[in-house]
Image 1 (cartoon, rainbow, N blue to C red):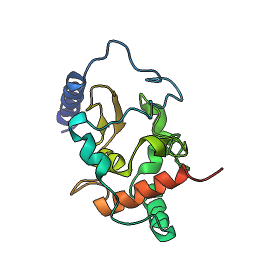
Image 2 (image 1 turned 30 degrees about the vertical axis):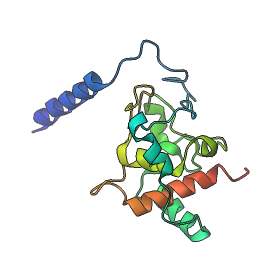
Image 3 (image 1 turned 45 degrees about the vertical axis):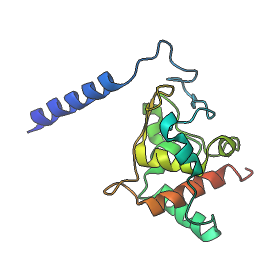
Image 4 (image 1 turned 90 degrees about the vertical axis):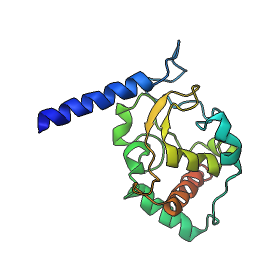
Length: 168
């Protein structure tokens, strides 16, 4: 049984490697410590970008919603593993990724990325879909049978956005 799982895992990994677009030169920050990828480049494919940018949360970031988002971020959402307890991209799993996970405490992030783009990433992951952005390891966590529901995804991303609005 374990041998079959090992072979299956190797096949899946090889399929991912072969399906990943090749870059002649890795983008700045790729594979280096502290190498958060350029926040100005959207992870949403061009043909879906307008729709993603125009998608808004179904509710406002009230203190109650932000508290719920924080609870999901730190718990069942699994966000803490890569993004860290404070949302700085320094979680325990971050060292295993080719790009440092997003630092949500960077106040500039909210000026470049919309909530709708963030939801797109929560639904689709960030595996290099645009051809301009290499895969980051961000999984699609908002799925019918995913880690969290779409409603919870909105709460989490509103909480994440609030981290860049706070002064620390």
